[in-house]
Length: 125
Figure 1 (spheres, rainbow, N blue to C red):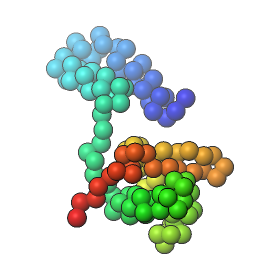
Figure 2 (cartoon, helix red, strand yellow):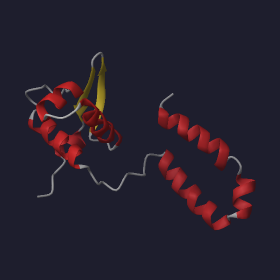
Figure 3 (cartoon, rainbow, N blue to C red):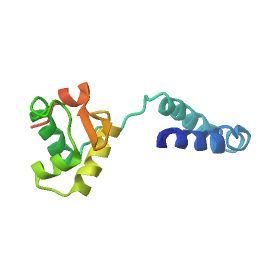
Figure 4 (cartoon, rainbow, N blue to C red):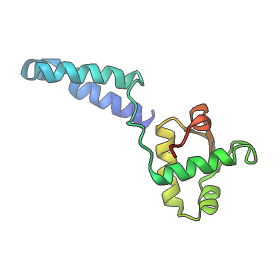
C-alpha cells in the first residue's frame, strides 16, 4: 500500500464513511469537501504548479541530460552535478515525482526518469 492509498483509506473511513456526523452538522462544507475528495481520489486534484527554485534547477538539469544519461538519474548524480546536498535533491525529487514530472524507476540504487510532462515542461523566462 502506498502512502497515498493509506491516506485515502484513513480519511475515507474517519470522515466520509461517517456522513451522519458531518453532513448533518456541516451540510454546505460537507458537500464541498465530498466533491473535492472524489476529485482527489480520482487524481484530478493537482497542486498549484508552483515549482521551487531547486526543483527548477533539478528538472532543467535532467532535461539537459536526458539523452546522455539515457533518462536514468540518481539523486547522488544530481547532487554532484548541481553542487548541492543529497537532502536538498531528495526533497526536490520527491516533489517532482508528486507533481508528475519525474517517476521512480529503479530500486538499487534508486533511479528516476523524466515523464513526458517533465520532458516537455517549459520554464518561464
